[in-house]
Image 1 (cartoon, rainbow, N blue to C red):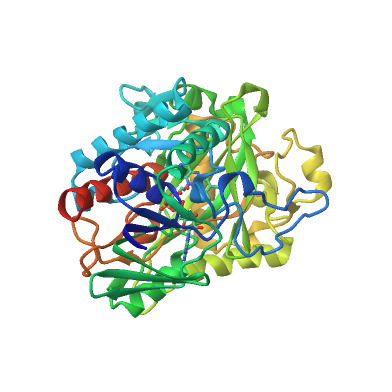
Image 2: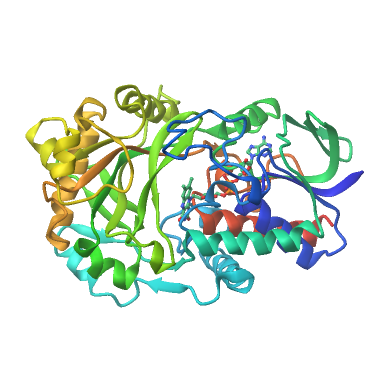
Length: 457
Ligand SMILES: Cc1cc2nc3c(=O)[nH]c(=O)nc-3n(C[C@H](O)[C@H](O)[C@H](O)COP(=O)(O)OP(=O)(O)OC[C@H]3O[C@@H](n4cnc5c(N)ncnc54)[C@H](O)[C@@H]3O)c2cc1C
């Protein structure tokens, strides 16, 4: 069977790419190869009781399978060019926003109707930030919530499964150019197609490196963001989260002039473990359903670290720091802000005596034994800066979970069509290094589908 288009990866890039292709070319023969499970079979064995730590499953249920890394996420679709990726550098700002709005409309059509769209336009919070040395980035944010995000994925799968051939539990081992297209090798055999779209996400980053090496596709190494997840009473940030839901606030540290930013804000949410290549890091999400709300809000504070020559392994650097926290804490570590400032470790009794009930069971410890001084200093400075616009942020009981790491894929050489130097071979979504978010990854899929439909099919 020769396919018209083979997608590698069933994350948002692959899903929206295949969807759009079907709108433009309903007769197209499409295959999607996915190393993880269908949505309903994605179950992480960690239950916090019998299984407390990662069993290193063959494919991680959190990161892999239909829906990709975002399947159990908070489902925040940020419609903006100010963060979430640099898709606009390839396709232009207007087109990028149009595509993100198009994806938003599809999310509503497939189960997200009624969810809230927040916006930073005309907010007074912008002024409050500027007056305190902080900078609020502009965006509209569709918050689907973990529960509705799942429903949207179920509905999209229902639509696609009747029209597309899915190969689940089928990691693609290699990609080769043939005389009339591409061949992908898997343990189940080799499959061929006229065009190939790689959308392997962050979990496929190491594999993507080998593909680029084997196919002589130039790459350049990228950055890594390292930080902590902050958890505090929801009231402290309620004036921001009620109006904006998610506020991306950036601060330049006075000491090192590093940029620290808030990331992935979850009002009334929960802090969760995340597994990246067997290393346990921290993340967070929240639910649309009020019945699932907690008393806390959590968000990440991340310091962006760019490396210069001769160092190339920015992700390796982030992994080493996360590994250190795993070594000391057996997983994620938690510390009260007051303990960090006093230079002492947190203990279970100090956490228990605090006024905040943690939403994640983590090992009380000392983050200063794990985080580089420069990064920790930046985080502490930012907490004091945030305290000016949200008093209570720098309270002793504020919880800091570490380590949160945001890995970036290396940047793959793709042109304005997101096409590699090999005609008909596209790299989209997070594995391209161009996107780092649901909306940008989804938009990149739609963009490539339209280009293929017009030019190659
Ligand atoms: C816990 C969590 C919460 C998040 N919350 C948000 C949020 O609220 N808002 C936001 O904008 N972003 C969020 N993100 C990031 C967002 O999920 C990603 O940016 C987005 O999923 C990227 O989409 P993608 O299609 O490029 O890749 P992915 O979603 O990573 O999908 C790639 C797929 O490819 C598969 N794959 C990899 N290699 C192979 C191979 N060799 N063969 C076959 N299949 C392969 C993987 O199994 C995976 O399913 C979150 C991420 C996580 C982990």
